[in-house]
Length: 168
Image 1 (cartoon, helix red, strand yellow):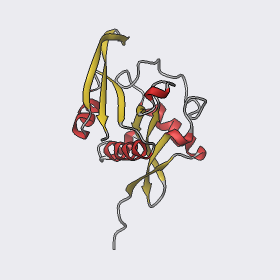
Image 2 (tube, rainbow, N blue to C red; image 1 turned 180 degrees about the vertical axis):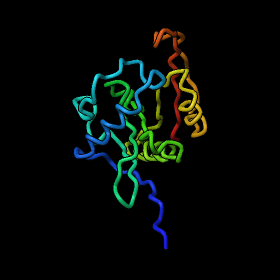
Image 3 (cartoon, rainbow, N blue to C red; image 1 turned 180 degrees about the horizontal axis):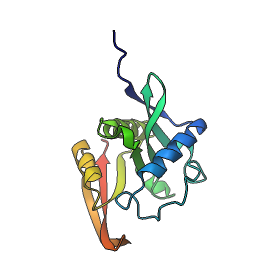
Image 4 (cartoon, helix red, strand yellow; image 1 turned 45 degrees about the horizontal axis):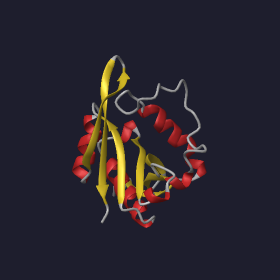
């Protein structure tokens, strides 16, 4: 009898996930995914802007390997904007990409957004990140706007694309 292949589950992040999440964050950085400069070394994953309760983790079971994450937060501190949650980052361990974990993470993000009473899940994605844009479109996100040539990355001007999923 062969062992079952690990399957993904989603759960809230825990403080002890920080090393694995930081390693995924560092390993997945490219000019396609972030307009920020590449960090010189892995930095702490949790800080004043990213708390464990704002991160959904994909974990392979059995075994408990952290396979990816999605960060959620409010786009503004305004009460009038509390019905909107923003995806502030989504990453899958490079060794595990192409196995549907992005979709699993988005399912987890939608469930968390609904549990928090959100009506809209928004995100920003760089125009040149075709795989991410395709995933979001397949999931039902629609393009809401584009900031043309918003970033100069690796010698090229890149658009910043706003997308959203309405959770009615």
